Each structure stands twice: as C-alpha cells, then as structure tokens.
Image: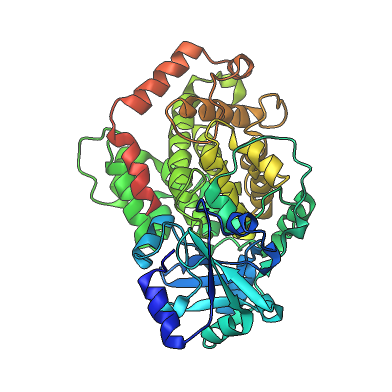
Length: 471
C-alpha cells in the first residue's frame, strides 16, 4: 500500500494529513474502490488527464460520478480540450499504476482545473496514483494544495442518467472509470442540446467557393486550381492522393493541374477538396472506431468505391459519378457534429463502440444517445445548403427500405458500407448487402464484387493513402 514516490514526497513536503485505506482486491475504478469500502460515493473525486490542440496537458479534478462538461471547460480555460490518450498517462505519471491519474497536478508540474463543487465538501476520497488503496483527506487541505489552480463549475451530476435502456452491450472498465456509475444518458436532454444547430460552425469561404465551382457547369480548371492554391495543406493532400497506387498512374504528377487533368478529373478534385475543407471546421479525436483516422479512411474508401460502382448502374437511374463520390464522402459527417456538440458523451460512445465491435454503432448510438449520426449529419447538410442528394444520403444510408427522392445515392452508399465492412472498414453491418439493394439499383452482384475486389485488393498501398489524408 505504498504511495508513488512522487506523491509521497510531495505530500510530506506540504505536511498534509491523510489516511490510506487498503483495497483488496485492487479496483481499477475509484467508485468501485469506494463501494468496496462502504464509502459514500458523493465524497469521491477523480482526476482526468486532458490535452488541448497544442498537446498541452491539464488535470481536471471533479466529483467521481459527474460528467465533464467540455463546453464549460472551454469557457473556463479558453482552450478546446479532450481526454488525453491512455498511453500518454503512463509517460506523464511513470510511478503510478496504469490509468490511475493522481489528483495532485503540482506534484507532476502540471496545471489543474478544480471543480468548484468540491468547495462545499468536508472531506474527499481519492485514488493516489495506485489501485490498491484510497486516500482520505480533509477537503480544505486538498483545496489548499491546489491554491494556484483554476477553479470553476465544469461538471454535471449524472442524476440526469436513466436506466430505461433495454439494449445490452458491454460497458468497458475504462469508461466506468471515466464516468463513474453508468446507466444511460438522457436522450431527451441530448436531443435538446444537438438541435441547437446555431452552435455549428459556419461553412468557410473556401468551402462556399468550392461549392459554387461544383455547381457551375462553366467552371474552369484554372478557377479550381486558384482556390486549392490558397491552402498548402489541401494542395499537398490532393497531390498525395493523385500519386498514390490507388489510381495506378505511372507518370509524374508535379502540379495540381497534373492531378486534375492526368489522374483524378475535375469532379473528383472538386468534391475531395470540398470534403477536406468541410472536415477542417471541426476538431475530432483521432483514435477509436469513431475517431478521425477511421472516419476519414472510411470516407475516402467509400467515395472511391461509390464512384467505381456508379458506371455499373442503369442509365435510367441518372446517377452521376461525381455526385456518388461526394455523397459517399460526406455520409458520416454526423460523427463530426457529435464530437463538436456533445464531447464527453461522444468520448464515451467511442469507448462503448470499441468494446462492442460486433454491434453496429448506429444501434449503440440510438440506445446511448437516443439519436443517430444519420439524423445529425442530415441536419448539418441542410444547415449548409448542401445538394439534396447529399442530405438524403446522410439521413438514409443505413435504411435499406428507403425508396424515395434520390434513393439511388442512399442505396449505393448503403451497399458500399456493407462491402467495405467485409474489409474491416467503416460502420456498416457485418453481413452481405441486402438482396433488395442490388435489385433496387439494378446491379449484378458478381460484377459489384469483382469491382470491389479489384479496388480493395490489387495493391495494399491503396488504403495507406487515407492515413496521409488524415494529416
């Protein structure tokens, strides 16, 4: 039951009184540890390691059973923050147990944010850097240790949680540790917060210009090059895309003009640039099945496959390959809005999806949040006046029974989701595409599978380009 040396030295220097209580067997959740000792959970605190976009670290200290309000964190600190990746904690706290974040920021020369709710407590119980004991300390003494730390209200009680969920899934221990007692998030409250779409970022001027270019039948390559040249990172991403084995072009691509004329074509470059510029309006956590790395890999793969399959569709459906590319590229943008509006809940959702790889994320979203990324993505596309095909696809791409306006694009994206899931990509269902989708699209299954196989398996390097495009 020894304390980490850094913490013991720190507390000895401050001459703070505390009591240690052994936990047998050790618990990885501070609330479970408290329960095993019969301690009132309303006097237990936890620490969460956060980082901002510049990778600067902060320890947030709050009641153990509360949810972090990341909007309040931003208002308080002036920075957009998110939970730091778990492996980073071991580097920052090398003498502590894995995932045992100590609520003593000063001992590790880190800043802290302390929830003001602790000021009304008489004592606190905490995990002091290991899972084998709890520490009891007078609240006034604990707050005195954080006299230089920033304080404010940035967490919400989980009294808003409800247990009316009838869908069973595995709740990972790491998520229990982050959020204390888990039941289910109140879906009505989530809907109220999400429907405030005035909080969505406005479309950038670059995206507006690209959208105008896309809708102008007389737009020129020179006009498109001029817009792309305004963003060096966008230029680099398009060049990497054109040079990748994905297209098998054997010549040299030295300019954006070469990428457009020799390899990609006007529509692909316009739509890809539009998607990339829109993506940059949101900060999205990179890790996890719903993180940016997987999201963008899925988006690029979906767009390429949809574009490749579009020529196989009957002419009577009037499917445009460029539109098919764009609808597939943007169909999951609802996840970006989720992480923008409900950061803490999205972080939790990402962990639950990680722990339940065989359950379609949409089912988990509906049970955890009461709303799916399909609805949210459609709201975003409507708010930005995107083409009707894009809006419909965002809303209906998981609905195999949709037969309405622009259903060919929604059905094609649904088909693509099923096909890519067989290669471990995306959030589709792990089953063959529904027969009625092939029928609705007038597609021959064998031809579809042949095109998909050729696109996905010809060269391993085809999928590595999506990792570059995330950067």
